[in-house]
Image (cartoon, rainbow, N blue to C red; front, top):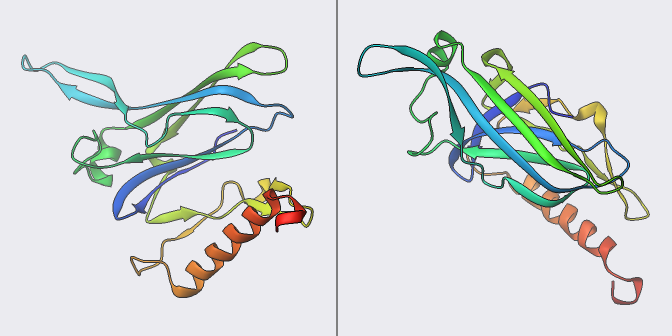
Length: 185
């Protein structure tokens, strides 16, 4: 499952393209690999215009076990095909983001393939995804799929507020504690 939209917002001070993927299977996808490309026009020295796929370098393109959800991210830096490109240019070029996922279904040892396409209308600027991982009282993690596609505006402040930072620390502490045996909690 892929999020219906992708977002572009700052992540650690760098503009970053992000989208979500989730494994809705009751088993793991092992050796999962994401490949993301942008389809945009290119002008040759002879004056030919062709639409060409340009690979986007991902912050993390592979995971040994894809069990729940993952936010796939591409930093828009000087090496990115998206660097310096405006929303207007992407619209004019009728740009598409092409996503491919491959992996191995651990239960039946079968290769799996999934793909998704994001049109320019599916890119939301200065928004971020809402948190979908919920920690259950017994320590299990659960994905709230009703929030999977939801985004919210990015704070005007570049850094997280004190309250957001404390909430994150509390969330990490609860998550970490739930992974430890009761004897050492």
